[in-house]
Length: 339
Image: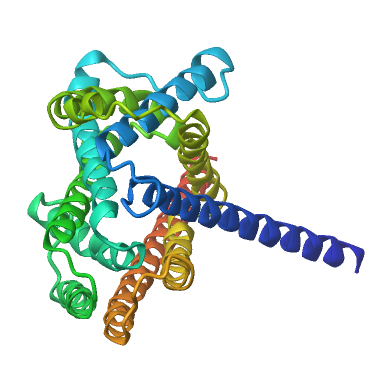
């Protein structure tokens, strides 16, 4: 009786901790998105310099990552040769910098709610690029699901009250670069046995991003910043914004480490609906019924995709256990014969 109660208490504690990690991640992800929108939007803080904002984030995050790894030794660095860094990390850093630049730029032109709807295309982009790079096998059922997600997003876009072509192009470009980055992480790093958590990722990737962003920053934003004589660096705004961005990476580390990547995907869906509700009720962005219907269709497609991934993962785990059981049985048989 006491043992059963202790077990149930342990399960309850684990569930509470899991929900706590989910809540922290949702809160920080929500905060970073809304904060970036506040800084970049011309109707709010009116500081439309997405490259500079991304560079501030990367400089802050890489500095803290160096402190955590080299000084405080919270996380062990990954053993990596210079050749591996140039061939594997540098391309990923280039794609990451482009993804962040374009996604932050989209906040200047599009509402928070519509951006979340466009982000529903991420599974479509990841699967399509995975098939092109031969990382995923083509399945007609999966492609039909991807088309249903795309159809839902197209309906949402058609129903958007403040549609901006340039903003949509920026966000779709960000999705494409991010999807390519995720596929290349599997090809260039995971396949080589190199697994980076969010802190070691920032340690290796953030300085690389900073370097790539420096060149467009010189030609695109630096001249405008020089002309803006009234500009002064607000340490409170940009400092707290950078802290939130770094804390989000730590929250990803906690959430995936203590639960699973699938849990983060499900939590991401909850976060998207919360952002849409916030965008409509607080920021007063227009959300039309057609918007919601289209996103609803896309949401069902994404939910089905996550369900299929979960089933495939369970089948793979079950097959692995059967193989381990067979190997153990063969081992015991050989031991008996040896005796």
